[in-house]
Length: 315
Length: 315
Image 1 (spheres, chains in turn yellow, orange):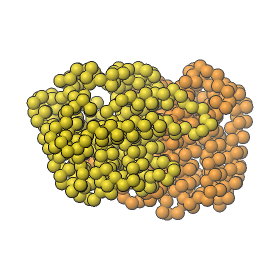
Image 2 (image 1 turned 45 degrees about the vertical axis):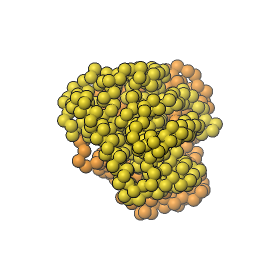
Image 3 (image 1 turned 135 degrees about the vertical axis):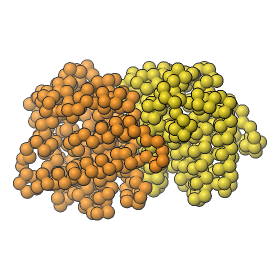
Image 4 (image 1 turned 30 degrees about the horizontal axis):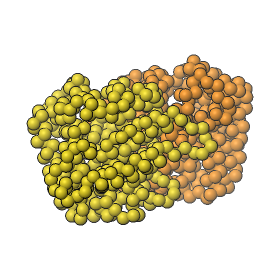
């Protein structure tokens, strides 16, 4: 993320780098602290499981989803009372993202050996170890959202669990991956491709925005606009992913480039070509920006900067 | 469950069969209705994923965990206000159980082709399909606990999500499976074996009891006693599992018998022999019964009957 150059208004009036560094540091520290403190004292530690979980999560990911949570939280008020909830939500969405990568990389799925420039979890810990680490990371996300120390109001816990479960499940990410699996070698029309991507990647990105907003105090107008913003950048992320799979090399991506074509997967590039895909990503960025203007929120600069980075990222 | 003969007090003063049939029917109907309604209308259905999820869940399991939820709920008050929560919790624990079986049967884990007398999910739907179905079932469990229709109080939603996540995650079921995986070919002492089993099977069984209780109105005394009850029957379940793996045949079990020894797994039978394992199961049953007496609850007959069935089951 940091390597992409920002453009437009946000770069001029918003100090992106300090904002980003400060919030990244908070997320990294929280993940390092909380993965995994869940174990009951006195019990034998499943040490290898926890090693695999930490390996999967604490690996220098871009943390786009946590940053979206925190930016949406701050845009919708950001009162101190909600900050713990927002940080927990930020970490929880990253755990769901991390588990999905671990399972996606397994031999029975994408069979990928390289992720963020490192051996994938199953290469490092075996297939069974990777399977269990992914399963435990999903559960841990919901542990994060339900602290027992009174730091997050029960109603907020319930709301966040509901949003995350729906973003991750059969109507969201897992459903999108299943459609993706069934679509290999098939020609999808644009509606079907958009639907697949909106679930597979978009649901968790859009969910991140809504979870962050619900830790603040959003108006109905703001929630509706942020929902539109989340949907637009969620889809934009995947369009750009399809573009980068064709245009970037594996070293820059930190994962195997060109694998969509190798696996004969339908993508925006295969459907509409490179130039129209780029134009579509730009259009989605415009939609996201317009949604932020509609939100009537005072300060959406971090959200605007994140949208720019989604579309202009190089990896 | 129905084939095991009850004994003792419960058989004389409690109409187990009608209770069981009535509650099983409610659980089956709810699972059939709710797996999977999560999809947003208008979106493309991940039909094969939902088929695999339904295949994994709607297959005549014994539903021990849902019955524990409902029995604990009724023992702790059972007021109408909590009944929807209890039914949702009952289904949610069954989804977690079902997902764990789907992943456990995968080639990289136990590599089992038979479950409840049917081909396992990956045999029927492929490995990737089974992986995703398990992942989506875990998410769906938390969707069940967070209905958006006002039927379950937010504080109850939060409590149930927290209990379920901890029962399923690295401190519970997934952690126990990881220890199990690392223990193949190793001799464990009794403490280590008990710890492994308490997580792997016991955590979700004990969690079921507590989730049911939290849908009612339990006193602190009742909660503590039910916690002891849940721990005792959770461990008893696994001791009996170890016994049945040696003494029952595959047709009765509905899964491959003798696989613990084939896989050189530490079990209670390998550690203490068959007769001492049976005596230990009986001792745990006594502990569970004493805990119910300590609970000061008016009517724990269904919980008592379930404990008997855990220990005296034949499959």
